[in-house]
Length: 198
Image (tube, rainbow, N blue to C red; front, side):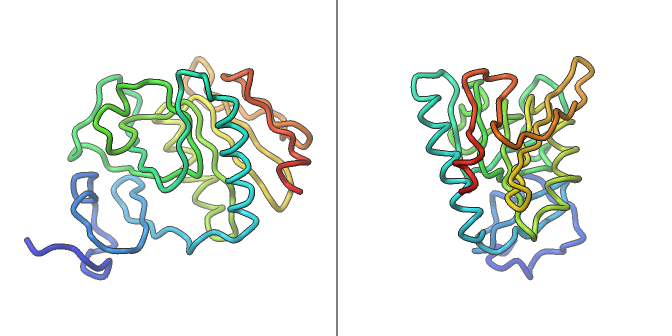
């Protein structure tokens, strides 16, 4: 099979697995959502990057002596429905690159390639080009995969929506944070939104 060096060599209506994804050698950044290829937006704007960078610095400092680890994009996260066993590459059909994620289970990082399974917390900073995908498609994937807490950062509204899995493995949305974003599963994590959005 010839090497895939250009996105145009792929059938954008086809279905692909993480095993396929690992063989691609083109420059464009893509994600797989239920086996379908989604081209990622062009490089995020300055405001998006500034917000993501501030979050990374602040959360990284808080987690400095914590057993959990913080990762930022580009970093592959392999997602699949809530089953406790890790999946083989050919059985994984969703690969995303969240802006930030916190992973507490070292087994999910054991292959040193990416996160194999749901992170504990995912943070997505919305941009004009990715809002629908983050708010709909990825929301469902994160919920089904068991991401315990999901933050949607809205730069335009200067607010953060926080969703937490309940006992039925469904997201419960908290009141939008407009002054301080406070993690539910990590009580030590809190972000002053005035400083974040300045």
